[in-house]
Amino acid sequence: MPGITNTLMIEGSFEELVEELAQYIDALKRTAGEESPSTQSECVALLKEAGKQDEVLKKLVGASVALNTAPEKEFIAAYNLLVHVIRQSENQNMFLSRVCQNLSSAPISSSPANGTSLALSVLTTIFNTLQPDNDSRYHVFFAILRVIRASGNFETVQPQLKNLEAWLNQWEMDEEDQRKLYLTVVDIAQDAGEDEEAYQYLVKALRTIPADEASDEEARALSLRALKSALTHPTHYDFQDLIALDSIQALRNSDPVYSQLLEIFNAELLDDYNDFKDEHDGWLEAEKLDTQALNRKMRLLTLASLAASAGQSRSLAYAHIAKGLQIPLEDVEMWVIDVIRAGLVEGKLSQLTQTFLIHRSTYRVFTENQWREVASRLDMWRNSLTGVLEVIRNEKANFIQQREAEARETENKVNGSSGRRGPRRDNRDGGVQPQTADLDD
Image (cartoon, rainbow, N blue to C red):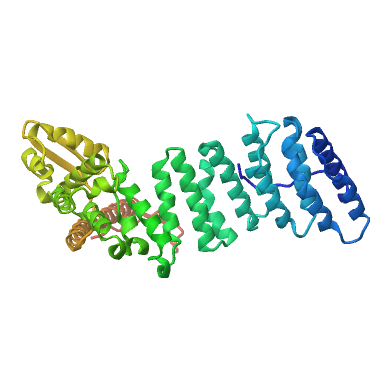
């Protein structure tokens, strides 16, 4: 798969390599029973004329589909030689696109079992020999995706997708090309059963739609596709990424029922969802939405909202949960366990008190009340930190005072022990007289 940029090291002049490859292509054609003009003869004739390098490459590349019949052990070497020759041209991108088409669209008849790995190996070499900012990498990567989709090997390209946005920025692709690539990834991921990853790239594709095109039919179709995926996916509970998109907002006019359903799953409760079903009886079934999945998700989201609104008590009675979820009391613990597994709430069940003790809850939508609560908690933390800092300052001051007092006490002891003076010589008669110690008051 695409990695660091590298080069192909093949010895020989352009003329020698072209003639060798053309001769090999002619041999493959003869083996396949194909009767056509000699590629070698045509290339040799053009090589004799000055400035005909690109004309030679057109002949060579035009016949290069024959390389798909090359024996498996020679396949990669033959294509690498072709890529090396093409790279001698200033117009290499024009020729590489035909090579990518050969590898991604034409069958590799010499090795049906390993054709995918052979094609990916050559395409990866082409990708890695191009400079990182060369926009031809876009077309090569597109060819890689086509091969992977045809073979169903999504795991082969999956680790590289983390680089996709950075690559698109380097290639400076326009929004339409970006969307085309993202949607290809969506299709491959869905074919592989990676629904969550498919959804994430579908949202990326929607973000490439300009605001003035948000109401177009393509934008509408993609928005409905993303909305249905988000609603029915068993582990997707956050709809803020959709709500913020212009194309999703445009559904309020084109598809108001879908827009209403999204608002309910984004912020409302089970009662509101049931009212919606009564108001639009049979609509969910007509739209082929999984009603069982929707009912389950709505109950989990409702329980998350109940936990978030529990207030200072941070607890919910079983009876309150049963009423909010419209379930029997004996099913409460099962639903609480499910909402914990979903990552929406953290807490502990107390069978003794018939309550759910909430440690953490997820706000589905941040309203003014939630922002006030956050501000209140930040004020509490700030006051607590102020108190801690004050304690630290006082302790530091006490410590400094204590050290200063100890230093003075030590100095006094030193001065006291060294206060007695030594003998002094008398100037009058040269005798030595005793001198008394000077004591501090």
